[in-house]
Amino acid sequence: MENPVINTKMVESPIKITENALREIKNIITQKNVPEGYGLRVGVQGGGCSGLSYQLGFDKPREHDNQYNIDGLSIIIDKRHLLYLAGMEIDFQDGLNARGFTFNNPNAKSTCGCGSSFSTH
Image (cartoon, rainbow, N blue to C red; front, top):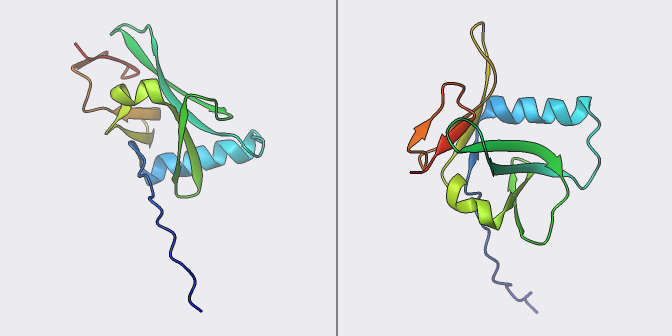
C-alpha cells in the first residue's frame, strides 16, 4: 500500500541573507550562546534620520509573526513589517572601510548616510 502524498507548500523567505551575513549571524549565535528556540528577528521601527530604521535581534516567535528558514537559520518577521522588508537583502561587510550589516532594500525611496534607516515616501 502506497503512502498518501500530503500536499505541503513551502513558503520562501521574503528577504535574502548573503553567505557573509549568514556566517556572521551563526558566529554571533555561538559566541553569545543564543538559546534554543530563538530565531533572528528582522523588523523595522519608527525613527532614524530617514523615518524608519532596521532591527536585527534574537527573539522567540510571537502571535503576529511569520517564520522562515534560510540555510538552517530561523528568521522571524512580524507580518506588519513584511510590506517594508519584502525583497530586502542583508549583507555583512568586513573590510577596512566598513564593518557591519548592510541592508539593500528595493522598497526604500531614500536612505540616510549610515544606511540603517530609510523612507518609503
